[in-house]
Every structure is written in structure tokens, then in C-alpha cells.
Image (cartoon, rainbow, N blue to C red; front, top):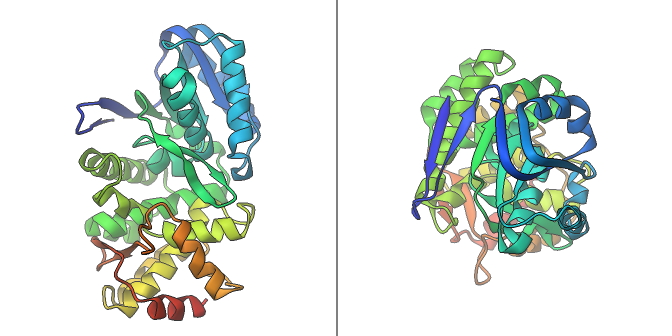
Length: 344
């Protein structure tokens, strides 16, 4: 299965959903990975991907390492191995690996090619597609980065066989996000099908990738409709920051964020109580967290202003408008937001 993505500037690349094909790269290649992924799958990748010269750089596993120090260690490996502008980076891991590898590719000698080989469900259905790269800092998530598109994305469902249950659930949260914001029929399909089934998860990956590719092709730099893909993220990013990226996986924080956003949507009349319940029920089906204890409501509120989507002291929220549609708005009154936060 191949999904093509074509951007307004005519940049185009394929997203392949299938077992990896044998590929030879006639250039220097650096594979960026972590100990967990390399332990399970590096030999498989090396059987499939060969190159004029191929080296591996292994970085620590975890969101807390998504910082400039790790970026510098990848850059150092690239310089030590004398990569040039025709060289290639391969992101071999989850969303953290993909974001950092893409960022390095965007700044090394002012930009080189990279390929995404996502190994988590979350990165397969979302993070690997669309060219968002970046790192975190003390002010928030992905506040430093660049838009830099991969030249190809290779999604091999084989990698999911070694994925822990929590990681699978975190990826399913992003699948549910896509359905709620863009596709009511897909949402209904998710309600009646079990994603623990191997064939069903492949269908869900395909539908999610097709949705993401369509959205990005309309709005590469997130000036409009692409921001809708951040449904659940405005709240979720604050949760991740408050917990120092150590308590929740990204998809788990997004799941909680969706529930919070839905409460706000119900309050302003965008979403019915029943629709909000159906979304929560689907999250609960896969043990995705849906509750969170806010320690300081005002502090949580102030964190919204560090979000990349906020502009001129206005908080931009992505709210479901029924199931299968959404609204991007900065017109929510502070009192309504605070009242929703107090419920948590």
C-alpha cells in the first residue's frame, strides 16, 4: 500500500505501508536509533537497507532526551563520519527519534535528506508524516524545530509485534484523534472493530495516513487546517510539561487532552454529552488515560500561552464540532476555560 503526499510547492514523496523492501543507497547513510529499537530490529533493518557507507548512532530512549544536547551528539557523529550534502539520515524509531533526526537533517550543512522508518504505532500514523521536526526545552514541547519533509516514509507493521501495550494504546489515541476531527465514518468503524486484530490495525494505519497526507497537502506549515491535527495537544502538552515528560507517553497525554477539550466543547455547545461520552468510551476501550489531577489551575492556564498555536495573547483551541468535524478558535472566554480546568 502506497500513499503519496504532494505539497503546494510540488514536493512529493511516498508513504509505503508494507514490509521493508531491500534498498541500496549510493551515498553515506547514518541511521539514528535507540537501544530498545536497535535491540529488537537493527539487524532486520541492515538486511533491508544497505549503502555506500552506513553507520549507526544510538541515542538514549525517552522524551526527556529530546533536547539540544542529544542533537549535538547526532551532529558530532555526522561530522566525524564526514557526511556531506548528498548524505542521508534514517530515523529508525518512534516519534522522538523521527523529530530529532529530521531536525538534524534540516540544519546539517543547511539541510540534507532523511528517511522515516517509524517503529511505534504513534509515529506510523502521525509523527512520521508531514515534516514536523523539533526538540523540547524547559518552556514546552517542540518549541525549537523546523518543517523539513522526509524523502520517503516506510511503515512496516512488523515492528508493532514487539511494541509494549502502553505504546500501542498511545498510538491508538492518535488514530482516534484523526477520526474525531476529520472522519465520522472512520470513528464509527473504530467503535465496532477491535484494533488488537492484526488486519484491523493495518486498515486503521492506512486510513490515518491517508487523512494526515490529505491535511498536510492542504497546509504544510500549519497556517490553517493542519492545526486541527493538534486536537487534544493544547491540553496534552501542558500535562507533559508539568510531569517533566516522565509520567505519560505522548499519546496518553493527548488522550487526556482530548477529554479536557471535549469538556470545553460541550460547555460552548460544539459537542453533545453523548458524543463526548462515545469518544471517552473509545479511549477507555484501549486503557488510554482519561483523567488528570491539576494542582494549580491558574498555572495550568498560563502554560497555554507558551503553545506554538497561541498568538498575540490569545489561546487557540482545537475543539471537536460533533464527531467528524472540528473548529479552530481563539474566542473562548477565560472563565469557561477555568471552569473546565477546575473539573480536573
